[in-house]
Amino acid sequence: MTLDDTAISTSAPQSRGLLLINTGPGKGKTTAALGTAMRAAGNGMRVLVLQFLKGSWDYGELHAAQLFGGDLVIRQMGRGFVKVGGAETDPEDQRLVDEAWTETCRAMQSGEWDMLVLDEINYTIGYGMLNAEAVAEALRTRPPLLHVILTGRNAHPSLVELADTVTEMREVKHAYSRGILAQRGIEF
Ligand code: ATP
Ligand code: MG
Picture: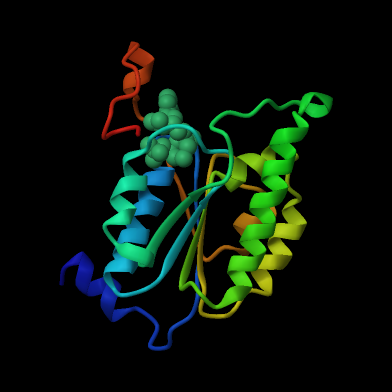
């Protein structure tokens, strides 16, 4: 029996929406979520990726998603950097997070999507820009078949508790620590 056989033979007979979290300090949280998004879109599912905090960088996945037509949509909801730290949080960044969250709630209840990826949302919670309990409540009351993936380091314990599948990326080594800067196709 191969690993794939095991996964398929133990899968539940009834469909249900799962909550996944990709967290931890190692590389691969967003790209694993995008891989899952591609898998779902390949199954004819409609996938929306809302990227908290991100913007301005020309990520390859933005162009790749267009090849899927309207079935895999990526929307950047930030400006690519964020100033944080208590009273120093820039009101503009807070406004963008609030807007991203409003859009998340709308998308969750719209029935337009089979999967929602909330990329980097864990950082906004960790920075105190988004309330973990509000996120948990929205997830608990989402349509039962909607899959949701949350990414970002330091996932909030209450969301980890709520999730079905949580993966912690562990850094074994990263090119950056040898001074190798971000490479096209690997980091963006
Ligand atoms: P990726 O988008 O490559 O899957 P990620 O989502 O796990 O990465 P983030 O915390 O969102 O990581 O950080 C995004 C950027 O930081 C990426 O360019 C990634 O390569 C880089 N990065 C991730 N982990 C590390 C690390 N341990 N050391 C240095 N840079 C990192
Ligand atoms: Mg990421």
